[in-house]
Length: 84
Image (cartoon, rainbow, N blue to C red; front, side):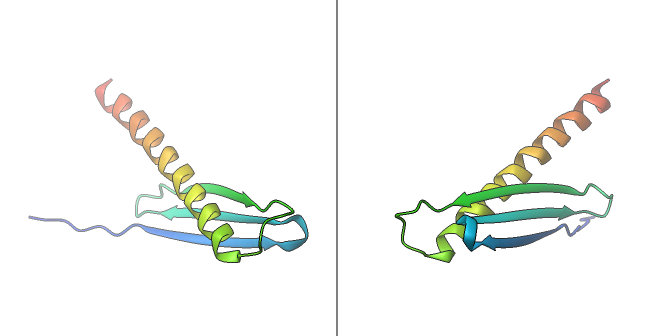
């Protein structure tokens, strides 16, 4: 029998124009309360053209990469516990 589960990732994006910074936070919610949070930042240099979508894409990609790394670390820890 196949068992389907749903995990949810929420992504929050904050732009700080005065600091030329975009911050993203990716939160993983699972049924077993494995709630992890990844963060990512993108900074625009003074000479760069203002294109908010690029900063958002970079910040979100970095937040998801951080979340992915944390999830792999959690899985490795779980495997160690099971293996004894």
